[in-house]
Length: 386
Image (cartoon, rainbow, N blue to C red; front, side, top):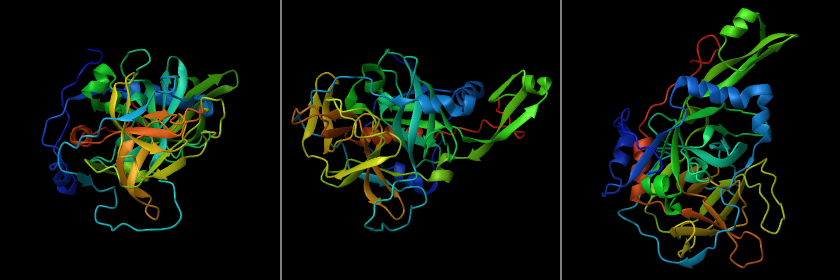
């Protein structure tokens, strides 16, 4: 078994509307797995130090991630398998609000990049904030959380930055604390279950640079640098919970595939023929109705992926597929995440993206993650807790 499975210590029962919605998830008990990421304050602090050092140089150097360089051999076949009644959980701030229709497509505020280190390289995928009891949950692809390339555990120094733009962290940096996915992906790397939910600590923002004495410099916990010109520390501040700052998308499962979706993400990598239409700097979207066919790939153990026509390239991995998306509220319901990229007409250009089908097992795994508290890592004096 590749990864360790952890007990559900710390999980609590949801109350109110969220609890009522979660109680209606799938009947069958799923196979789930959970793994610690930055499971302690000291390890979370080291993640912040790493990405914030030298004015976020590591963030700026990061490039899009795709663990498998070859284009998957996807073909139509099989069939998706609802395992119970369909269900939905409302987005943060819209539990009772009616959907609105507008002509323009406004990008969701919940969208961002997850940064991590894979094989010594600085990488990123796409992701979104999603509804949860403690407003501290991120949804993305499992291959953007688990280290499939080296057959290890979770990817190193994992952090979510909503609204990231060229070194800017407008709503703070959120360090991953604990990851949840399907047992079949955690152990067997089965891409039919290529989704993950990650609890994150309160966001960390940066509140200026302060020159300090050598003694204060040595005592300070957080980003800092010093030498002949003096000693400097970067003051941090707690900006609160992810969902309070950017909201959180709703969640839905066991839906028919004919409903239109918007797939959002940050594509960057070139097409197989070398053409590079995207910079990865700004988010993009694809709109359409997912195919009723299911795309299969023996190499990735895929038998039940849902396909959507679109020219996204890697970097969009992990981005949300949102159904019932309202541009006025910038909210909808996560019904999938971008997993694989396909070339259906064999012209060396991606023309298809796929997602795992979200069923009742997905909902139960989401439910476990959505009820786990994280905490904060910034102290009262601008230092990072250890």
